Image (tube, chains in turn cyan, blue):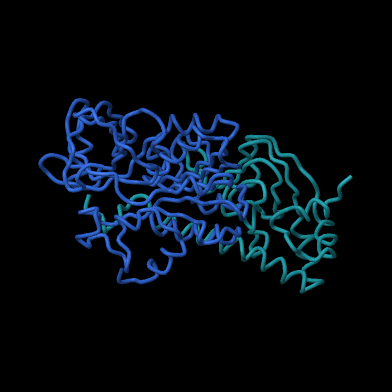
Length: 158
Length: 273
C-alpha cells in the first residue's frame, strides 16, 4: 500500500523534493475524496489546510449574490489548492468548489507550519514551491488582463 | 495558382456565423477550377470594391470540399467579407506562403495550441490530421478563447472532443453563465498535457500568447526548431514585393506565415519591429 509520502513523490508540486521532507510533510497529510459539488473552501473562513489535487477539477472563484460561483480559475490534478494558510491572518480569499469527485491529499496547516518552524530548510523549500505557484498564477492573471484575444494585431488593417 | 496578382472570381456557397463577429465563408471558383493548397497557407480575399485582405485557409486541404476562410470582423475589408451572403461573389488570389509542414511531422506526436481566431489556420491542420490519423502519434489540441461565446467552430470542437484519438483541451479567460469547462489562459493547460520532447508543436494566436506558449513548450523539452508558429502581419501584395509584411529580413507573406520559433523569437524581441 502506498504511503502519503509515496503519493506525494508522484505529485507535480513536490517534484525533486528531498525524500526526508516527504516523510515529514506526509505526516501532516491524509487522503480525502471530495464529492462533486462540494464547497471545499469558503471566502473569509479560517485557512487551516491546503490540498494537493490528485484527480478531478476544482473551480476557484467568488460567490456573487444571486449569481452563484463566478469562476476565476480551474484547478486540475497536479495543482495545489490554497495558499492563504501560509500568511496571517490565515483567511481564505476565495471560494472553491469541486467540479468532479476530487481525490486529494489534504494537509493540516498548523501541523505543517509547526514543522516548517522547527526546520527552516524545509520551510524555505516549501515557501519556494508556493512562491513558484504564486508567480505562475500572477503571470496568468497578467496575461488575462491584457485581454489578448480582444485585440486584433495592430499591424493588421483588415 | 494563376497569375499571382490577378484575383479569380469566387462565389460564396455557404456562410456560417461562428460567433458574433466571426464568419466562415465556403468558396468555389466561378470558372469551376479547384484550388490546391496546403494547411497553413493563406489567400488574398478581395471584397469588391473595397479592397483585399490576407485570410488563412481554414479548410481541410485533403478532400474535395470548397475552400474555407474564417474571417473576424475587425476592419473595413473584413467587415465587408463578413457581410457577404451565400451566392455573393468575391475575388481570390493565392494560395500564398509557407505551410505547417505536416509531411515532416509524420510519425511524431503533435501539440497544437490555438488562441482566439488563431484556431482558423489550425482547423485546417486538425481536420487534415483527423483524415490521416494513422500518420501521426499522439495529438494534443489546446484551444483558448476569451469566453465560450467567442469560441469559433464550437460544434466541431465538441465532435473532436468525442474522439478517442485526440486530446482536446478548451479553456476560456473568463467564465460566463453556464460554462462548466476550464477557466485560465492556455499556458496553464500546457503542464498537464502529454508533450514528448520529440513532438512537433504548431501554434497560432496573439503574439504575446505565442511567446509565453513557446516558453512553456521549451520548458517541456520541445526544441525551438520544432515549434512552428503562424505569424500575422500586414500582408498586401503577398508576393514579397511591397514590404508591408516585412519583419526584419523576413517577408511574412513568402517566408511565412508559418515559421519556426528559432527564426521568429529574435524578431519579436526587437521592439521597433
